[in-house]
Length: 294
Image (cartoon, rainbow, N blue to C red; front, side):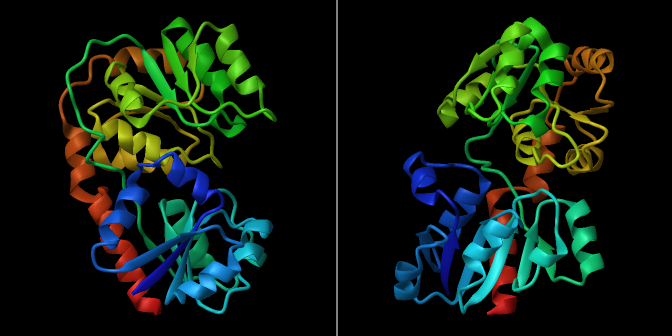
């Protein structure tokens, strides 16, 4: 099968060697299928590639949809999260979802979907390390991640890592103000070392925010995630695995959860990841779905 993978900024992402579960899933698929990597508007090169199917990673916003819907090929989308607007759901032959809540939305709309998600289990692994941080949060600084809540709950014991965004400077400014250690984007190996040096992954993402990858990556490293009760996409994994803590998005309650997380031991989360959320599971479900529409 010839698969054209489309992602806004893929040239930049591949230049930085994005090494998440999707990256490794695609590398697995390359063993038996031909995959081309393209920017969504790279019409000339995509047509030269002559794909059997387009696999797009992104949100269902109008701009993203218009970039891809023009192509006369079968189309599947790895839905990146956010609201689902019915007017942007036409033209897709299949939706790959990361969360039960999105499956429910698509089911109501009568759209075809299946779950395909996972993390890079080869590099996110447990390893004993001295604990230096009470809580860690990694990923670009964005309002929906509620870094203000993270900062006021973890204070000097917190570590926030990620790309600074000029249009939302308050996200990292509040971390500085509250004494949280702030780092720009780090190499994947460095991030994993810092995860292992933390007592927990404090994921303060809100309802519309994602953050599921962070939750699963923490589990894979043997670090308990703390997720917010109003973030069903993250609660789903903590509830199913029985690993980690769900608490209300309130500062005192989060502080109590951090102290509880320091006492959580064992590899229950790691074993859960390997039961269904590795890059192999991701790749197997992607190709299963794509074969159904080609």
